[in-house]
Length: 384
Image (cartoon, rainbow, N blue to C red; front, side):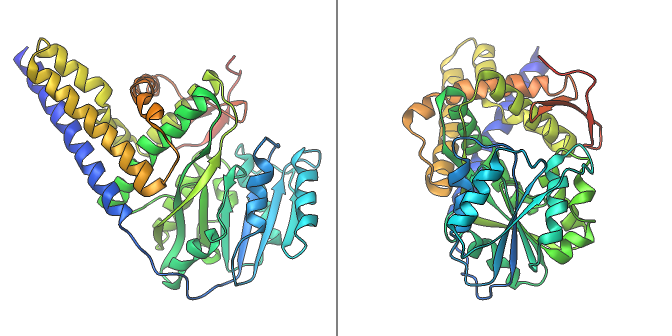
């Protein structure tokens, strides 16, 4: 019993130290300032699009109204000419004749990752020295490209990426999705950058040097994998290029989600993270304050010290979320969202435990199995 208590004390201490470290990293990142771009090389913005939701028009239109002095183009890539997004893209192109817009229909599949197949086909129309990527649900500000391009003044930089936040949510489950981004994902990115340097890309917004992309075999080399954003950055780094995390933030426009949508997305992310960074993912067990605080309280027979430890961990957890949301992401979360944090953390703990129980994920309404190296294989049957 004494050994178990000692282990629990160490885990609580580790959790507290992690939260303090995370808060420090967030505060340091919030103070970062970077010089504006001095050169404006040609950029090709590639947009892999599938389907059309409520915020799709605003998201796609934001990339046609950029304030970028250099030459740039937007290449939209779709897998099917019957995709409902195609008429919308054509309408937007007609509305912005000053933009160089290209549309590519790419029915050929290079692997189970349809997005990478689309982007590989889009490269045939890309003529920029730099290639910028952003998901179809990303809303960019006018200066998005300026700030993403600025670090390429250093010829050793091969890829830049930036943080993201929930720009719009509908209902409880999409609110919890946004809460996960602000309280977990983005703070973890800032900790990783501070401790070891950035070694991956965030798929919401990426810019890569064409030469670096060529060095890793292009998008076709990623078509067999789920974690294409992680691998894109990781392989560019392994090829000898530097990666840079920009302090700007883009918005993700969420549609209304069901509990099933939320749960399957979180489980997919967790199992993907476990495959990509197995040691780091296993070590992340110490970050679950929602587990260690109550366990310590129960082990202390609900003593004053136990309540104090629980209150301290809860306060640190809330401070990380508030600092990230207010100082870095500058999001629109409220006190009501803060009150949802224990629920989100409890669900995150359940997802964390379930992530070790299988290898199946659901992505774009299709069921896949993850191999140990992160490759995708179409599952024999779908989850219902």
